[in-house]
Length: 262
Ligand code: COA
Image (cartoon, rainbow, N blue to C red; front, side, top):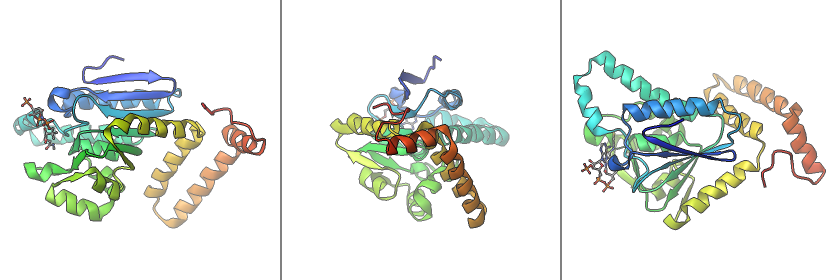
C-alpha cells in the first residue's frame, strides 16, 4: 500500500516502517495518524510478518504532535477535539496490540507523542545521544492519549516527575526507567536493531505472539486468581500446539525447530 507520510519495506518476515515527514521532524498530523492506524490494521492481519521495526526519517525519530496542526484545533468544537484525540488513542492502541514484536529504532529525539510511540514498542533501541521528553506541559497541554501506554511502561513514579516537569531527558535515563532497553553509539544503531531481530526470528512465532498477549492479559486481569487461571490455560495451549511440540522435540533431538530462520 502507498502512503503519503510513511515508508514501508518488507524483507522476509521483517516489516520496516519509517515515519516520513522529516521537514517537521516526523510530527504526527491527522493524515499520519490515519495512515499509521491503517498500516497497523493491515499488519495485524498478515500472518507473514514476524517482526516490525519503527524508525524515523531525517535527523530525528519523532517530534510528537504536529504543533501547527494542533494549534488549528482551537477552532474545533469540543466534540471534534475529543474525536480527534480518540483517533490518536486508537493509533497508539493499534500499534501497542500488534501481535508481533515491535522494535523502536530511536535516534535524535522522541518527544511527546514520539516518546509515546517508543512506549508502545516492545523493544526499544536508542542511540546514546537521543533525547526524550513528555514535554506537553511546557506547551500548556498534557500527555493524555499516550498516558495509558506510558504509565504501563514506566510506572507512576517516573511519570509523575516527567509529566509534571515536561523536562527533556537523555537516553541513559530512558534506559533507567524502562522506556528504552538498549543504548548504543549512533554507528551501532542498526547492528543493535538487527541483533534484536535475530533473537526474535529464533523464537516460535506463535509463542512470541502468545507471550505478548499473555503480558497484556495478566496486566489487565482483575485478580491474582484470574491471572493464575489465564496463564495456566495459555501455557497448556502452547504445550500441545504443533509449534510447541516442534520446539520441545527439536531441543531434545538436538536439531533446529521448523520455524528457525537461522
Ligand atoms: N510540530 C510541528 N513542527 C515541528 C515540530 C512539531 N512537533 N517539531 C519540529 N518542527 C518543525 C520546526 O518548526 C522546524 O520548522 P521550520 O524548518 O519551518 O522552521 C522544523 O521542524 C525543524 O525543527 P528544528 O527545531 O529546527 O529541528 P532540530 O532538528 O534542531 O530539533 C526537535 C528537533 C524535535 C528537538 C525540535 O524541533 C523540538 O524540540 N520540537 C518540538 C517538539 C515538542 O515539543 N513536541 C511535543 C509535542 S506535544
